[in-house]
Length: 142
Image 1 (cartoon, one colour):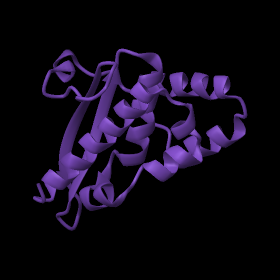
Image 2: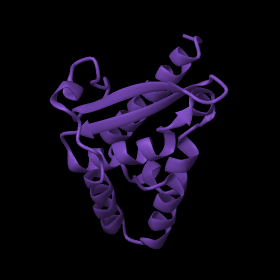
Image 3: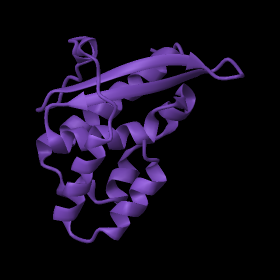
């Protein structure tokens, strides 16, 4: 999986939004496929116009703190790229870090805030909120 810093750098290199959309689609193609079981109702993200699934794996780091890893998928190419972007930002990180990380500045920096349809922007927020809710639950804060 491509790291978030590399993704940001690649977005900076692409000046046209058509190229950035193509890059998002390419990012989506890098996602590891979800199993048929991963495409379950329980993994479905509510609030997305397209179908989006997020599968969560919990583990503990050496200090015993919860760490969450995510896999995801969507039935729409650009949204699948947005899933890849969100996973690059959050997956494999400690739950406390996930809760403390606000994705909005990143989306603003790479221009997503201004270039997504309202439905896609709502879906992106729903993905982020789902991930942060899972992190809060892992910390016992829900």
